[in-house]
Amino acid sequence: MTAAFHDYFMRLALREADQAAAANEVPTGCVIIDRPVDDTIRPVAVKVLGRAHNQTEMLHDPTAHAEMIAITQAAAARGDFRLTDTVLYVTKEPCPMCAGAIVLARIPTVVYGVADPQRGGQSVFQILTHPQLIHRAEVIGDVLGDVCRERLQAFFRNRRDASREQT
Image (cartoon, rainbow, N blue to C red; front, side):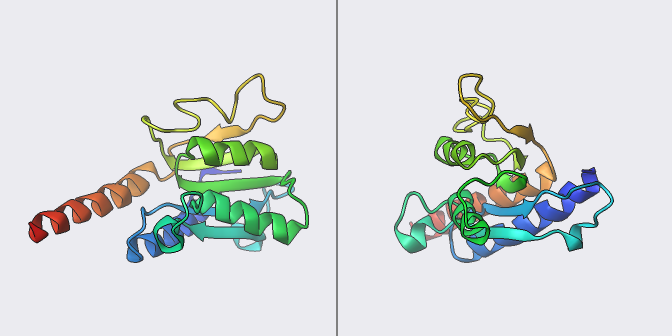
């Protein structure tokens, strides 16, 4: 898969992140696709199995992360919790909970935009590639990382500014 291919699906995940931000949720978006059988398949011809954005505030649910919701959708679309031959795109590196779900779902490739050096399921805990786990994922980071980082920074900057205005 080419960089342009990954960029295409990361942009879909960014659209989901924008929906999260519009709902005052942390702007993280996720898209899960069927892995193409070869590199000649155009992105528009690839089946999207799940797409979601963070909904923890709206649902009052700490597990309602974009990845968790998208995994549930993809499993329903497949009729199986085993999501082999898929690719997961997410704007921010999965947290430990989401990384664990990715391993349990057997998703072979995880592509993220920006790393989370404080709470990252991979950069801090190496869950996605841990040698003692039965399933390990290929991890590709920093896809449209600057764009993903800016979305997160703008969201938290706006939140801080709004908080200052109230005081």
